[in-house]
Image (cartoon, rainbow, N blue to C red; front, side, top):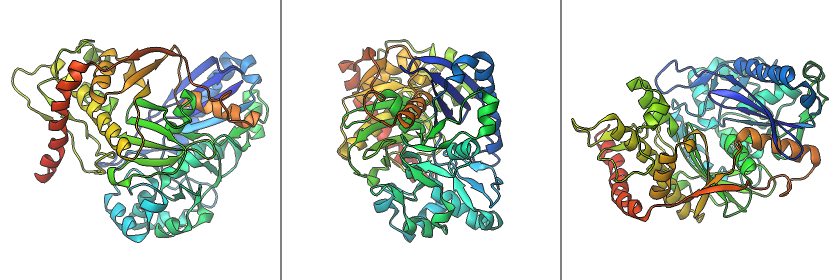
Length: 483
């Protein structure tokens, strides 16, 4: 048995799988996000521990026999979060999350101080960890002065599980302190942020052992002192679950945020279009991502302001759309990453008229999210990473209408895995197996069986090509008006 723990923004998920990677049990516990000021997004790390105790308690209660056969644990989690600890491991302030936009000014400062683009392989964006620490240094100097260790969210969980200060390459690459080509911390980039290597955790590959479960936790859960794998950031973990490990393979994640992920066999950044270039979770492998911040969250926002549940809104759009909506939606509700790199970007509806109803607005939201994915396809192609097909995962992939729109707007052939949950928790469980077994080949990271393909509709693709040009022109026009 192998356990995958995925620390998500809205909750933690524990998945127990057997030696053949069949799912045995799943447990969930919710988490909340605090937004004390506009553009801020924080969580209390103590809540992560409580949620982990809750899901493990449920597994112990419901599946004690299966859990007792546990051979390894893998970790996944939302990336870029800044968890600051003092010398006694006390949390100094709430964790600043991936979708926090407060550090825009600090991004400019860091870009001028060091070669983040060349060494870290990415633009300095407010979502990443480094500018968050500079913001703390400038705005909460007493906190910064006490900071002995900076840990990513899942690595704080690891500290609690194992007592070890460790991270792994895929998540560490999202801090902007990693030399992504060399797969090691960069003293130059740390110094630019006022930090030292001693304040960073150790590094392992995601498929390697990072420590072992503490005896008191092993006893409480009825398991052995099993190895804990390095694990992966949430997107790399999802790739591990999908078997997206070699060049030419990719996945499209339609979750809270939108991600187009492609595996590569070399370090090849494209900072000009805000493409993310990170290490993968296994040795000698990298990946590129186009990332935007409000995918299904755009529909959640519409649900909140209309007072209509998301499933009800989604059902208003027919499975087979006949024509583009008259309304154009920009999904920049929390600023934007790929390809804009603008934390101040704002969303918009364009073309609203008195006779536009909820159904057309929902369709416009789905189209706007699909066009954000089309942006990602375009800029990954410019970086030399072309994709013709991608696995479709995430909560939004349950909407057939959205998938049909997505295929026609992006031009991608979408592959739907046959039954099963192939998300980050599953990938974390596979990394647990890789660490416990000492191998990271196709016997562990094989792809899922494809149950169905969603193909672009040539007629709609042509119609949406015109609307995509309007979509691309809208952001610079609104930005010029300071909207």
